[in-house]
Amino acid sequence: MNILVTGAAGFIGSHVAEALLARGDTVAGLDNFNNYYSPARKRANAALLAAYPRFTLREADVRDADEMERICAEGRFDVVVHLAAMANVRYSIERAPLYTDVNIRGTVNMLEAARRVGIPHFVFASTSSVYGHTKRLPFREDDPLGQPLAPYPASKIAGEVMGHAFHSLFSLSFTALRFFSVYGPRGRPDMMPYIITDSIVHDREFMLYDGGEMYRDWTYIADIVSGVVAAVDRPLGYERINLGRGEPMRMADFVELVEELVGKPARMTTPPAPPSEPKINYADVSKARQLLDYDPKTPVAEGMQQFWEWYQAEMLRG
Image 1: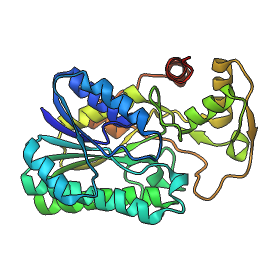
Image 2 (image 1 turned 180 degrees about the horizontal axis):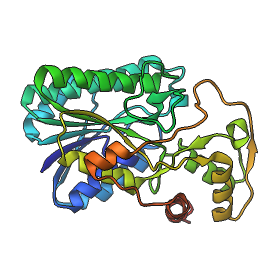
Image 3 (image 1 turned 90 degrees about the horizontal axis):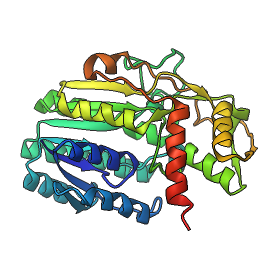
């Protein structure tokens, strides 16, 4: 297949693009290399992809509607995998205009480009944070939404809803994948696995809300990628699907795991969690198993060992 992957130089995007290339697909990667975190790290990810002859890189911004339509028209893609976004719940709290601009307007631009040039299938990166403080555990896709805790999940709910409009009006196949606490090699420096590891290595304090009595459904990057690739291969009409591990882990236990890997104790403060942070996230993945043959295989201890090996090789060189 011929596939456009937006956000291809990022953490998840680079892994998805690499998996598609490795199996023989043609991939156009799109990224704007913004400075939310080090552009050099994204350039390094893109360089890994450039080793594949079926990869091309388009440096552009999803907010540029005319350029998105031109890229889609020239590419004649079978699928758009839309991963480009401003991420991070906490960072979004005082930046609602930015998240609206990138995540909502940018997504509409991609949907409109796909519609105009006849791309039939659209895979959208959503987030577990759309569930907010839902009371039912584990989180199921039929939980009612509409009470997000920050601009980031609000923007992702808007993307899911807009996808439904394009499906209903134009028969675009649209699959929203709700990612749960993704971690692994190439992980972003604003994500907790990296923050905790880097802080312990460098003897810095970090914040662990509620004394670590919070739970996250850590999901290894290779398992997430397997779900994304399956969604690429299976147009389903309109679907929203959880991609998690389905085994939430207490944050205090997660910190202890990292302490064992690094071989040093953590230094942390333990303030109360802000309103933007739910007590738990916990995926029901039965729908993903049914529709995508999704089968997360990587225990957290094994996945964090892989992350630690990558961190040592890439972050502690020299």
